[in-house]
Length: 189
Image (cartoon, rainbow, N blue to C red; front, side, top):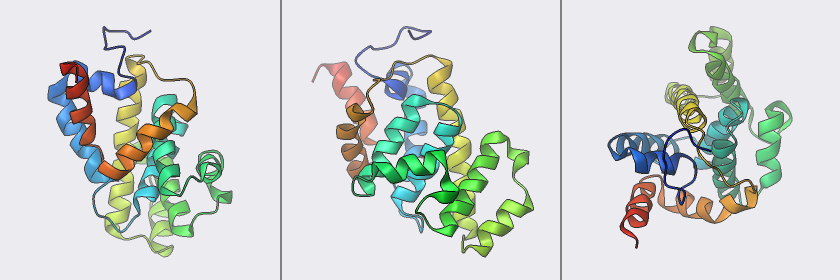
C-alpha cells in the first residue's frame, strides 16, 4: 500500500507523476533524453542499462517495465533481458555493453565506486566519452527513480506479462507520452 494517497489506476512512477505534475515533466524529459533520443547506444542498450541498475536496486516496477521495453526493442528477447539482469558477463551482448554495465554497477554502489579501471575498460571496448557519460547518468537517474518508486511504496502489477502492452507504446513514442497518458486518466478520457 502506498505511503501517500496515489491514483490507484496508475501503477509505479506514473502515480507519482500524477500526484506531482510539476516534477513529472522534468523527470519524464530526462528519461526521454537518456533512453529514447538519438544516441550511438541503441535504445535497447540504454533500456538494458536502466533495467540492470533497477534489478541491482531490487526495484520490481522499474526493472520489469524497462525490461519489457528492452525486450520489445530486441524483438521480444525476454531471455536476453533476464540474462543481462542476472549475469551480464555471460549475456549475449557486446563487450562494450558489458563494460558499460560494469560502469553502471559501480554507479549503483556509489558514485565514488567508479574508478579508472571501469572507465579505461569501457574505452578499450570502444565506448566513447558520451556513451560513458550517458551510462553514468542513466545509472544515477535510475537509482533516483527506483528510490522514488519504492520509497513511496507505489503499486506495481505483479505479473511481468502485464508490462508488455505498455512497453510497445513507450518504445515507439518515448517517455513524454507518459505525461499525455496521465492527463487522459485524470480528465477521464
